[in-house]
Length: 302
Image 1: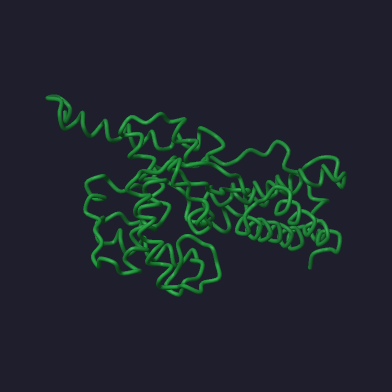
Image 2: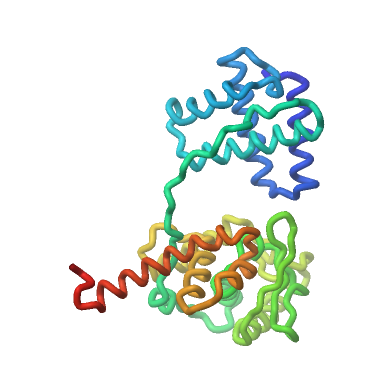
């Protein structure tokens, strides 16, 4: 059982990252679970109920426990370490502790994974049948907005009618931590939005929300709803194992890079705070160049 002091500090920390740092609800929940897991570990192994009294040795042993005993992946462990670092940084700020037990502990190495994306020739297979049908128009718009803008599914669900500017042909998107950014859109996509809105308003004339893209009942879409629509569409055109909305974000960035777009421009469109986050897509481009070389050069396959 955690101490009253830990419980109070945990609630203050969670409130801080949610209101001041504007972390998403998913991140807040994940940090809460991670910290409570560390707290339970301290009680079971060290009989220590106050997490603010933890030492660096205890933190290191927790990492070993996650790796050796539970068999967790380095990526998962690093996320938990990030939660602990943030918590103890907050404790330092509040002058609850003098030294963070995470001081000197480095993140575990993670294998670099190529971002999964759908090749252009597969994306060309995507088609929608059912002229004028609301669900067909909605699914097509949902899919095309994700692919043509690279926005996150949470950003898509948060789009409102007035976020579309037909004069400047751009979308206003609210990203992580409520940061706003502008994404340019094409004339065909703008026309698709207009056509969809007319049918949507006829289908749901009395709807209460102002969300641009709605579900089958005219209400705000859930993450699961968006996933199902994208998964069903990609199921018909690609053998890629992962068929999520995020794959369309990867696909957008990779296709842009392959066509010669500046990586910093892609960074701005995607809303990445760090260029390193965008650079993962350059690996896909390099792999494509290797394939072209091996296919085209006389000695490429030797």
